[in-house]
Length: 552
Image: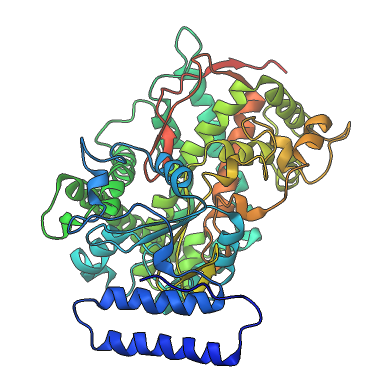
């Protein structure tokens, strides 16, 4: 049905009244229409939207679904244009074909997914999410916790899957232990001890070319698990022990988190066949979650017993740990669930982030030497203790991590459910729409990041480098010409639902990277790294870093 364009100004009251009657008549007709209800709805939306100068939701561009099969065919082998593509490649293709806002619907069992690529629209979405942000997705995790293992998770499914009031209750219990700076700072010394142990292990891993082994990423997994388990479970698991057996508990946990991320992409993106038929991906996914449920219960029980013994012996003078703080604010099951979520969110992501940072630092030798000089100023001896004050002074170290995250982000963006009707890119977006805000396009835009194809940590420095601070003043001047918009790249999210483990993740990565670059000169001599982009974007090639010990 063609619609008459409505002038923005000078419209008489009579015309407005007629239009309002027309809208009402469409709505009334819709209530009596069964065969053409969706058409009637679109007609009402179109006329109502034109009255306000805003386009209707069904006009959002995007791949058009076919009758019966919708858009699912686009993901099928042989015929699907998106089959085999990484998630960020799909983002680029959608943006190139349809623009800054794209609707992808017609996937059986899935809500429509709205992609918004402009940071201004991401800001609109995130600033209007209210005190209880709703994050869609994680249906497989929801099914596992709320159906398959509901006997354990009946009182709450945890921060990863809950929404609304249940999410707020869980988050409020975890905020104090997880977000207070003084709590994270008490872990500097033990996290540094794990990092130093890893540095010593790196010396033994080198081959005759002084390179790390092909499976070096698995060694980073061990470091990450050892670090986050100490925070989440009050336990050193012994992940860095030499010749760790494949059937050891740490290695089982590493394999489990790998299986979790390897299979969740297929479970979340495709039709939810696993709800009626246990696919191979679903079986591996369930087995992985069962491992972490078993381990968390075991070590939380152990931590409670140790805490009781210390109190009985009058040895409870230390600052309470994260786990002890969680137990003081919630029950044992809730603490177990939080520990699981911390490990799921903090093993692969931090490992791959460090791997990516090492790669970019190795490929940019000038920047590596700037970082080394900063570390040498703060740690004159390579064995000097990393303290809160010294870590705070390592501005270029933090900038290096942020820039590597921008150049190759581990996560593609942020997902929310619209909690009320809103307008994005001049389209009316109804409440309940799933809104994905990828930073795939904005993080490589010259508008926001001049010389975006270059690794320039100076873009994250607040002040122009001087003789006494690390960095290139020339590079700082160049990259500072970009338009500042924090919503162009949000690796840890935004607002009440931002990453609750951010302080600990940054602490682990900063300390390990400082230890490695202070002790070693790093090279990567195998060309440009390639990546696999699923739920996480991860290095595809072996991390064969050449590691030479520094003498100073």
